[in-house]
Image (cartoon, rainbow, N blue to C red; front, side):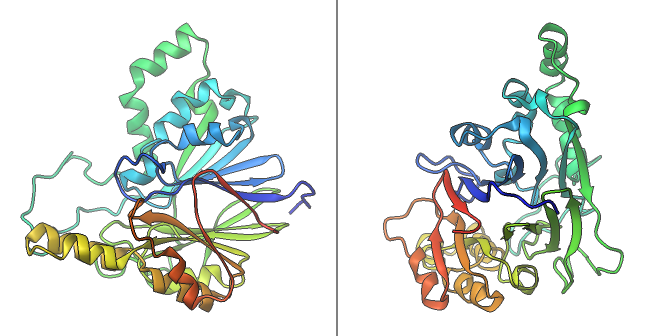
Length: 333
């Protein structure tokens, strides 16, 4: 890879986890800036506005990566085109390559005690990333066709190309029985500034779900995506300079949902405790991976009266950063 003299930095665009509207934190989204090249990770609520506030130039965007297809990670995806048209996206020299999970193939069984609901879009109930982008374009076809004809905007195909991430055939993935089997990282994207690799992570029933590693001439950063405690994240992050990892306050889960015994409460607790990573475990995981800096991101809950995020440092001897919206973190401090 070409040596970068202007430095590499991570920009936390939004740090709130979950499909909720927060007054003080935007939805989950991050950027990696390598010299004059820009890469985006996830497109949560407000991501495009946050990019504007961070003074990121969409004309420099080369690629984007989606960890999984939950709404709080893709809610602003259509806005990348619809608003990016007017924020220098037309300046890209070649289409921006967008990568995300393929289809899991079948709808998950309902959580224990919950009644099965009618399936949404039974003809295509679990579209993968590329199909999701296609459907979003169809949903906004009236606007898109009008803008191209009335404003002279470029066809979306000249600006954005969406791809499903293809798992290596050797990975024994199964959405129900093996959503994150032990595996080696595999390559997803490469150019003269970055090499991006991925592993499956534990966020069932949402699967496939990925963590991404960016290796640059200045160092490496890993984004965990949403995951419970997962050995694959340790494998991917071993030796990395920075680990940006999701976190959930496990005591808040019990205070909030453990006071009533209903099917929904039980399902919520089961999801939060298996598909997300408690505060102490994030520190232990980062310590085991040997990273230099741990950045807590995708905070659940996003606002809390008694924050405990610092307790991750009781299990981690490196530098701990509790992420804030629009925070910029140099890869080499």
